[in-house]
Image 1 (cartoon, rainbow, N blue to C red):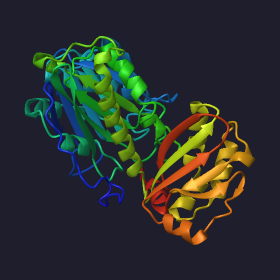
Image 2 (image 1 turned 135 degrees about the horizontal axis):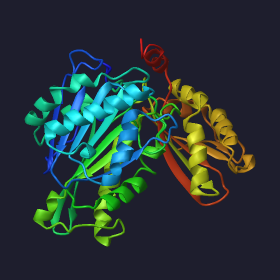
Image 3 (image 1 turned 180 degrees about the vertical axis):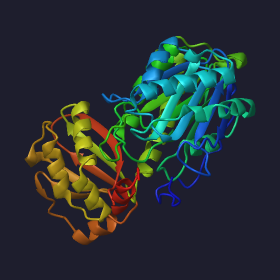
Amino acid sequence: MSSSVSPLAPKTVPDMPVIAGIRLATAEAGIRYKNRTDVLLAVMDKGTAVAGVFTRSKCPSAPVEWCRAKLKGGKARALVVNSGNANAFTGKTGRASTALTAKIAAKAVGCSESEVFLASTGVIGEPLDATKFDGVLGRLAEAAEPGDYLAAAKAIMTTDTFPKVATATVKLGKAKVTINGMAKGAGMIAPDMATMLSFIFTDAPIAPAALQALLKSGVEDTFNAVTIDGDTSTSDTLLAFATGAAAEHGAPKISRASDPRLKAFVKAFNQVLANLAEQVARDGEGARKLIEITVEGAKTKASARKIAMSIANSPLVKTAIAGEDANWGRVVMAVGKAGEPADRDKLSISFNGIRVAKRGARDPDYDEAQVSEAMKAPEIAILVSLGLGKGRDRVMTCDLTKEYVAINGDYRS
């Protein structure tokens, strides 16, 4: 966790309302860090529905495997998250650690081990000593209160420079329901489902299958449209919990994601996901520029996504922007290497609304001084127009600075 907050961090932090059926507590378990919280326990009321999406890495962490197996039950009573150790690439020892953590948590909360969900973030390849949770989780279960999401978000940080939280309130039937979310992630971000770790809580009465469908759909244009460095984590976990407490106030019980009564809820749910995903991009390791890349005129949306990601993951594009250099030639390179349909002589490129390239050549109205001034802004919008069809997509990333190398050069040591 950095002592210097990213200059791209949000200027304000939302007040996070209480959600009935959710209690939170944090502690110092000494997993890796000293003198800071590093474990979070969330306790859910009986009947809480759970949904999740996870990394598609072929080397998933032990907690990812645990959650995938337990997700079939559809119910959750506890969530345990630790920072400092990813419990990934830890073999039988890692699996034993997840089982022991779940056993300790289940005893502390008074539930089945199958209702305990786990997530870990930090160093890969080092065994996680789950005995450090013994006693700690019991105290947390007693101390848990329906409250401090900001403290919870701080406990799961690693190289993050600020805690990431978001909230939304919306009507479901006659009742007001709340959606709260938290996330952590600053490096090793190229999600193939969600991001490093993210957790969503709501009091809406939504069945597990419906919640799963909403989550799977919601990540596509939010977390799956964010990249920091092109590296997909072994630990990517996004879990959503629905306590159903709002049913007591008139919210209808939802069993299908296609239920028309969910329209406003889905919009708010996706806004929370999008907000958290953007905060991850704003906290990219060493970042000084937030970059939004829009590709339009592609053959399909999927094609636009691949091209946008090719640009977003290009070290040459990212370092040019770090240097405030409108080097559109590097964008041309990234479009060309994406392997998607593109016509050089129809290609146009803009930086922050200023067109620099038009129909396969430098724009005749190109003004170096004007563009250089625009590149000094903390937020850079790149628009690529292919002129081939109606496909359009947008992704978020950040620049690549010397600080990124410094952070990752000694991350483990």
